[in-house]
Image (cartoon, rainbow, N blue to C red; front, side):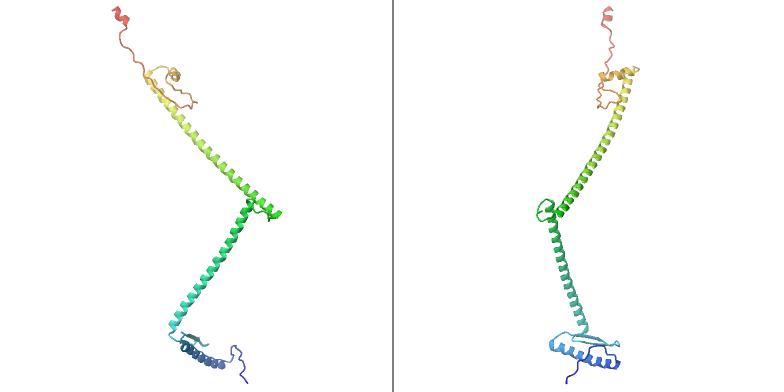
Length: 235
């Protein structure tokens, strides 16, 4: 009659649990040693009892086994991470390809191509999209025109200010010219001089004139100080 199958569960009896631990610990250590010798394997075994006692076995040294395990574990995780990253980017590439295909198809439909498979509601939706896009284009065009008009108005205001400055400078030049006439002709009537400046000297002093001013001063005729011929003959 064979031995009955033992149920694997925690042993409640403390003494029985301790006896079982000692037996199986010895057997496990023996198997680890045999595995290292027979198979030329690097084996490391660490056991903590319920009373926090440490039992260990290493075919070379425990430090060497732990270092090799850490390195191998890191490489495994790194390889796993690389595989996971590759799968992630493959999935992202598939999603982007699908989105690109949908965008290209939508673009062709907006251009009036490949409409044979669309239903009436889908065509109405496409028409609404075109109307919304057209409205956006018109609003953008109107905004650009408004901005250009404002810019032209600003340039016009600047040109007007420049014309006002030029007009002021023209008035200043006319005033300086009148002072020169006063110095040349003495107490002669200023009104007569200013009235004749238009025909004699080629400029006007009108307040509302914006015509460019061209000043041409003439030298006064020299006065003759000689003796008249008649008086000379009578002498």
